[in-house]
Image (spheres, helix red, strand yellow):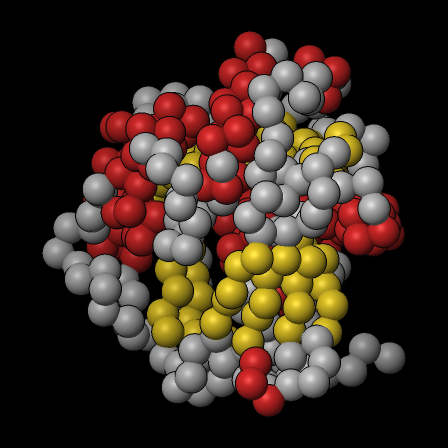
Length: 346
């Protein structure tokens, strides 16, 4: 299997146990995760050689994040060290009609203070076939955006496949960077682009034709997003595949989930899953991306199979506590085959 590199921030996640509110709890559950590290964990879990690149503080908390990556089989030898702190985010898990809440405490984190030249991308990309970044990284700071641009330029020069999850975050982009300009330049280097309708609208002003993107509900029609995929490919001609996730929000505990892929000629569509009694939806998109990269590497001539694997993998992630998807290939393939019974495996 070809080697993959992901680049971004890993954070300390602190959550009240169960469905407690921040104001109710006297303790927090600890998880380490982040968009790109979650993708790396998924890939390592599927047996794909993968390195996660970031900047960590040289202290006990940074070491804990490092150990979490090593425990999951992710390569950490290209991580650089410096700065004073690991970014933190607090998660209050919602239920039914009460949505989840995130509070960030990531200002002045090690990666927020990263600068151009700190990472030797030529060495990082030696023997690598695929590079993945997300829209979260350039939203952290100008330095992170600059280093991300260094990375995509270096990867492009080496002929490496580049993918992104556009991942718009309303609570980031606070440093004054020109979001559309930065994201347009970075995305122009990408071969595979993943995003939903909000990502396309917020980053590039691209809207689905004939659909109210602000109206939540279960009835999400794949056909309505074909226009988004076509507009994205027109804006980014290097892209070979544009993928959109389709989440219908019935409640915080019940979502519908599907996906579409446009290769410039044909639109592929998955079945729609009913995800009821969600355990943890954080990292759902990351698990989709991890499954998609694995699928495209394993089934390079079968986009439908790759897309089906990504959606099934992400569906299973919603049943797993924490940021990362720990579902196995056999579990994903079982769900792809239509077995959603959840019977005990004896």
